Amino acid sequence: MFGLGPEWILTARGTPIADAMVFSHPEQIDRLARSCPEALPTAVLAGDPCFDRILAARHHRDRYRRALGVHPGQRLVLLNSTWNPTSLFGDAGPEDVLPLLLPRLTSELPADEYRVAAVLHPNIWHGHGPGQIRLWLDRARRAGLALVDPLEGWRQALIAADVVLGDFGSVSYYAAACGTPVLLGAADPEALGTESPVASFVRSAPRLDPYRALPPQLDRLLAEHRPLDGPAELTSSAPGQSAALLRGLLYGMIGITEPAAPALLDPLPLPPYEPPLRTAPLRVITRTGADGTITVRRFAEPRYEPDDAEGEGHLAVHEDTLDPGVLESADVVLRYGEADDPRFGSPRQWAAEVLDRYRSASLAAYITGPRECEVLHRGGLRCRLTSDSAGDPAVHASALLARLHTDPGSGPAATAPVPTTLTVVTGTHLARVRITVDREGGPEGTGHAAPPDR
Image (cartoon, helix red, strand yellow):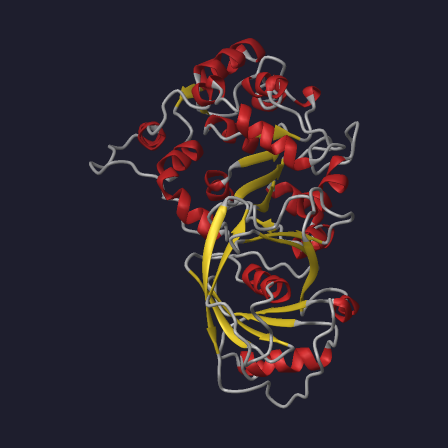
């Protein structure tokens, strides 16, 4: 039994190596009694400070979601792997799932309906090195995957998650203890003690089928999910009490009186704001309803045409995409930055340069914040799009392009009538977008040709 056998906790003379061994639940002490009774006198029940910090911070869930750039209506899928050859990030299991899974997570799941983040065990980072990890995950990161700090950020990401896609590691078990749906992409019974609560959880948890489409599996998981009693009960027998129990133990061991002030754990810090930066090409599907509402679905570098891809399609590409050649066929070129960034002159100047350079593009969109972007159409229309809710305004630029190319009552020319508002739907979220037309004139320093017939 890993960590509880005599070879782990007894000296060569057969005596315990520790004065006290801290456990979070009596079930663990029972297993210690069976595996190494010589160490039983050192066992102390003192809760789980890690779990207590998670419980104490659950009311900050919305903040943690916003820190990861999760917008209203989006689901956060948290990918996690423990440190083991048969883990999700390992390659010694019966199936090497991760290489198959990673590109599909970011290409099958619509970008504005899902946010994907990954928590990897610290030993993965240490064993392979940060540079190698980032190299392996480079394509997924360009498509929108967030890499979470393995020491300081994983608990906050776990609290924020809607779904955890993991393996037999502790993060999956903590997720189940919090009531979060868990889908196992790797499960190795040989890596766990058969009588442990984690092994029991792994035997009963839903399994990922890496060869089936992902969205239906996630939909079914969420629809059928019922929180399990076992993980919540067996993670800690003293939830919220670990600080007091541990401090009492330690002060007793060194023989001095405890302070009168309450024992407290450090609260989880608010992570930095890290919205997704997708530089992978985006396949955009738009549908315009009878009432003018525009539904937008975007897929990051899909290998195949997305399922249910009914509607008009176009290609939106970030200017910093890995393959600059893709920009030659882009319909929309994107840039994210501050409006006063001197490197680009101004959003207006940047847009004019982009449309001069990439003759296939109909629209250039400079996103200045989570609610606003500056847009220039090749036909001369220049405007600002302002949403009533935070999100990725690049969606609204694609919606505007769809509106201009499908609505006979509006046109791209600077003098043609254009709508004053857009109603844009992504997944279950509806945004109302105000269009403010810039009437100061045509593009700066450009002689734009007529827009291509796209």
